[in-house]
Amino acid sequence: MTSIIIGNVIALIASLLMVYSGIIKQKKKILYVQTIQIGLSVVSNIVLGGIVGAIINAISCIRNILCYKDRLGLKEKIVITILATFLSIKFNNLGLIGILPLISTITYLWLMNTKNVIKFKTLIIFTMILWFTYDLTIKSYSSAIFDLMTAITNTYSIIKLSKKR
Image (cartoon, rainbow, N blue to C red; front, side):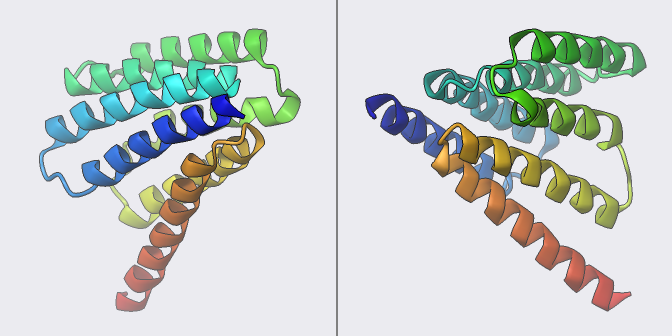
């Protein structure tokens, strides 16, 4: 029970940093704050027993650092995909649910460069639903609430954008 509380407190801090990154206007600062947020998510996932989530978040830290340094090219994406897939399969302790963070991160990695706002928001919704399911499974309720709220706000945003067109 103590590990669930500790894991959720860390997840809450990480989630608040995720929200904070949403109000920052400079890409480099956003990536910096998100890297700290993802690092805290790694710790939270470890405490809650979500090994694949921790692995995927650690790899996402690497992705953000490469993106921060403008070095996230095709070769890096391939290496990240192979590394994430290998480690997720090797250390998965949750069956099919344990693969959800892998699907989320690979999908995001390969589609994140879209210039279409609606497609990008749809990508975020898809990845957040996968993380929501995973976070509920490992009892990361703080993260699950923020995952769900992110999916809902992006859905609302898509509806508003679609009405303008």
